[in-house]
Length: 309
Image (cartoon, helix red, strand yellow):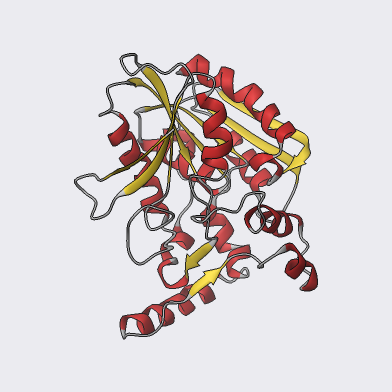
């Protein structure tokens, strides 16, 4: 693995990435590349890199797992902005970097996204036709989630509050950085936060199981307005022409990955080859790192990418 930083002409900051290589990597050869997109509140060292990135590299792909702008080890200020437009544009920026590498075959570019990264990966594929195949692992439409559960089903109230907060910050007030999860599983239990996705996210992000220095699970509240007016799946019926694989777990949680996966699979009627992998006994966060469901997902993902990349 190699850790790199790069900066495009349109950026005032750098992107940090880990490049995962096949074990028999030879720099003079050409390889297919998969851009791996981390979840909302995550970082490249977690599931997008250490689990799926590493596993796909072992199968002969070069995998670039990167930190989103304003997050992890990537640049951008203020920190912890979750801006879907930037998140989608970051995918193109990573591709711009990848095509400058002498060992990358520009005709064999794929993208994979986990959780919110799955929604971003699909949205990027609508217009980024350098992408030849896309896969979503328990993908979430972050716009839909913000309009619903993350705003308390009051998106207009959330937007008004964001506006007030942003005005205060513009006048020199303190930034409001929201922590997205309880501090620990015990705190979650003490406060009755035992809904499957919330509790399992806490077990992943707030314990040694998945905790990483760059995986802050934080969001700058005042800069999240545009998220509420964004939809990962807009124009899917018309613009998503590339092969698509959607992996979901059937144990349903509040973040809505099962629902979103079924929706985008149903709408992707223009895709050259759409595939749904629905895993009966597994949940959203099981698919982050649990060996058995990850193996089941990879059993489908690897031949999918081998076919199209």
